[in-house]
Length: 282
Image (tube, rainbow, N blue to C red; front, side, top):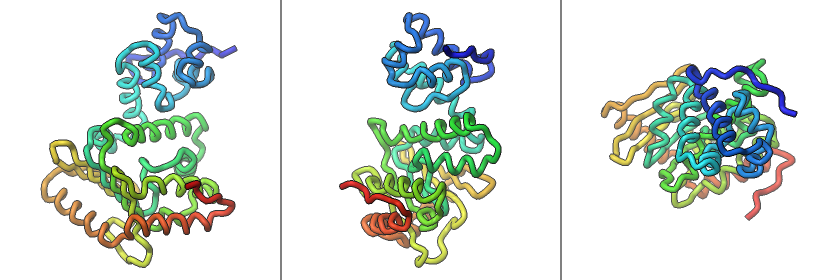
């Protein structure tokens, strides 16, 4: 038997509004949590947690709920608002542009970029960065970051180009098993019609933004916005001079990086340092 949840305040929280609307639509459809669980293929426990505001909905449950209830994009829209509640304000505008971008180029010096992270890698980062945070809160952060990866699966997926510092491969976030899984997840995206991954090896020496993150977001109208982040701050730029400078710096990093094929080989070689680690299936 599920326990009653806390009192929800939908006027102040997208999370609570999502839970209230889920309960309302479920009641209108005459569905029990068990029956809805069968329809959307999510556990009754998870659905109850979402309905009572105790958990964030794990992607792609919002699309499945909209299909189940015939509510258009209601739950998808509520999820978008909920994500912004759980993301640093400085990153809000970047998320909005990311969802609309035709081309996304990103550099990560020391951490695998969020769009490429596995859930276990995310969790390890959040636990280390938020000591004392409850497991439920950590789950929420993981769910919010995972939702960003929906852009990789949409019909009109952007062109992606990632440049990774070799440190992202060597820093054992979460331990060997987590890193093995993470590096395995990178390989299928190293060189496809829509995705490219390059690694800047240690031997390349100094490079731009060695301690941070750079994201270039190009919209369908060919306008580009820069998001640049350091250890404690992040800034958005869309003025021509800054965008032109950062795009040139990114191109220079491409020139310093290994080719996609060589990058994939380095990723595979690094995987072998994490034991036990099974090689990826071909």
